[in-house]
Image 1 (cartoon, one colour):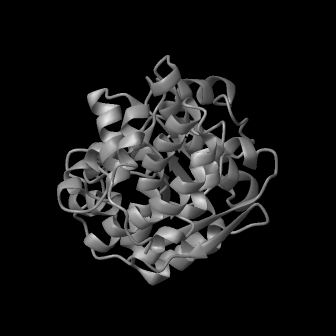
Image 2 (cartoon, one colour):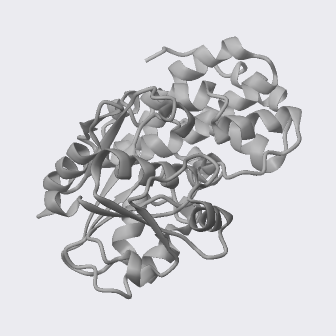
Length: 324
């Protein structure tokens, strides 16, 4: 049943990534795609009036609606919105009959106020039986995909059948999908790579590009500690969701998180959505329980306004220790 439903897809979210996923589904996979967005959203307005959102021009089998009930006519739904808005959306969704529907969360982050993973937020608010959820994580920028540059993703879920169905659906000559084996680790790793993207941007702002190599080596160890704390496998930090996404986050000119970090040094402040800022706040409470030096000095830079160069220097004052 899950496989046949993929012929008709809904995407909630009309921004950069949601728009591309709708475009990808319409071109590669589904007979029809319905894009849902808020009437006040400029990206939705652009899609409705012009059939494009600043990144992609939609094919003819894509339609647009701001009616959530109409958007839920399909049983297969991708959600791609700001992570901090997920709980509110889920409360709206739960007012409708969702039995038999399967969702894919195509976002990377933790809820700022609770530190919870996105599938946890989803399950807390969607209380109906017969509703499944998976996550899509890993590297890939819209601008690169539109240039036919292929990449890889990992799909994970607490339901093996749902995981396989979504991964098989996403797989093509443009996107190679893998089955995840650690939902906790993949969600945390994907969220924290945005935080490490902020750190990479700070290094770019200082023109300390060579230090990114050390950042790439040490960050997965730190992220692995967080994954293990919540019951996941720390080795997952070395998979597609975290380390595999570094090129797209730590080096790409398209990365919002990297640009935000760079703007902390060079200015002006980067104003677009950078999910790493919220995730950094969510994990800060763990700095008192775990050895998280990168997250600690980055938090003090982002939220307390401390000088980035001095903060990085603090990392070099720590006692010498074994690498592993």
